[in-house]
Length: 70
Image 1: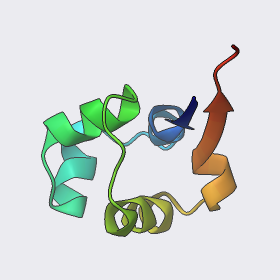
Image 2 (image 1 turned 45 degrees about the horizontal axis):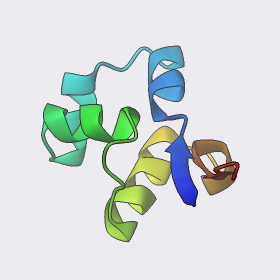
Image 3 (image 1 turned 180 degrees about the horizontal axis):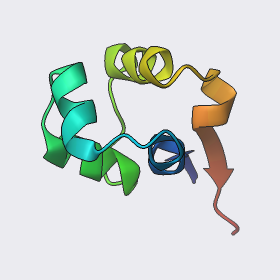
Image 4 (image 1 turned 60 degrees about the horizontal axis):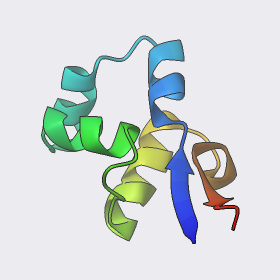
C-alpha cells in the first residue's frame, strides 16, 4: 500500500513558523496542521497547493509517496 508522507513540519520549523501562525495564515485550524504533519490526514488538492505556495517549495520537496514493504 502507498502512503503520502510530507515534510511540512521540518520546513515550517526551519522557517520559524508556528502551527498557530500557519493555521491563521491559511485559514484552517491548528488541529488540521497537526493531523497533516503527523500523516493522519491528507490535505485536499486545494490545501496542498496552498501549502506549497505558502512554504515556497516544490511539491516534490513537500510531499512524497512511501511504499509499504510486503
